[in-house]
Amino acid sequence: MKKQLVLVFSLALMVILSVNSLTVKSQSVKEPEIRFFVKESDKRVDVFIDGKNVTSLCWPDNVYKPVLYPVRTLSGTEITRGFPLKPRAGERYDHMHQVGSWLNYGNVNGIDFWGNGSTGIKSENGGVIRLLGIEKAENGEKEGNLSIYAVWEDPSGKEMMMERTEYNFESRGSYWLVDRITTLTAGPQDIRMPDTKEGMFAIRVARQLELPSKENVQLLDSNGKPGTEKAMENSGVSGNYRSSERVTGEAVWGTRARWMDLFGTIGNEKVSVVICDHPRNPSYPTFWHARGYGLFSANPLGAKDFTNGRETMNFSIPATKSVTFRYRTIISSGSYLTDDEINKLADDFAASY
Image (tube, rainbow, N blue to C red; front, top):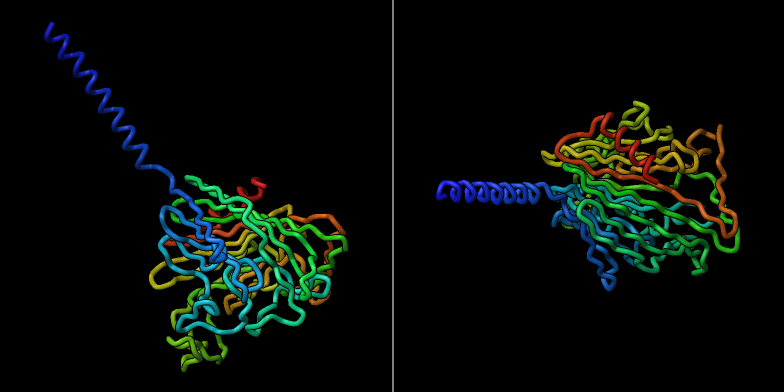
């Protein structure tokens, strides 16, 4: 009888230990948590992945559009330029309107949304994208959704278009990604968006991810003022582009591709920044307004500028009608993403929306 009791007790103990082991294992593989902290009084929504602030949606009065800024790798390294909001030594101080990651356009019924604020103040012909409210900030273990409403206004404050944008964040091991799904709805008048290179979905990256420069322009010093270092010295500069069509370097400008990878090192950290186009976007695969000085932009609407007049787009949105633009941004660190990895992520994106 005692032997039977011992046997039953031993079996019960094994079951308990097995359950505990499975529980510990389950806890050890729990997906990183994505959380949003809405701070409307500060005009900011902080985005955390596994306790790390990877970016913030912010809408400062002097930026004239909502932006994701700064953008960081999962290790905390900033991959966006600090200037003009928080200048860092060794940065360029050109194009003050290029802040973080954003979406707008340089000619909307003759109004310039892209270049507004390029001199540090509101332009006479500059349009403003005004955030109206946060629709949803939904936390998740592996995915999180943030959605907003905004309005595109002309210089007088007249509403031209309504915008609804979803930011869908995901964490995937050594990298994270965000899908931006933006729907623009015209007001009572047609919206004309004639061809211009000044657009559309863009990110302005840190100095280290620029391509080596031959320009003899001054860079900022530690006080945020023009210093003695020149861009052509290329200190710490390591960036390079490559596209899905195997075009590299500055030759990618004006070419079409389904995705573009900007890769380089910041300190000892290997970084890839990838933007994927979507098959349902206008003019797929998009043209790329990707410059060596750190502007990295997908622009499906600027055909005339990119082809020296051989093609034209002259895009428009009829009154009260809508159009949706979809872009995926991938921020990887520790190793560069391969073509196979990016193609898989681009295919996944294409099938998701």
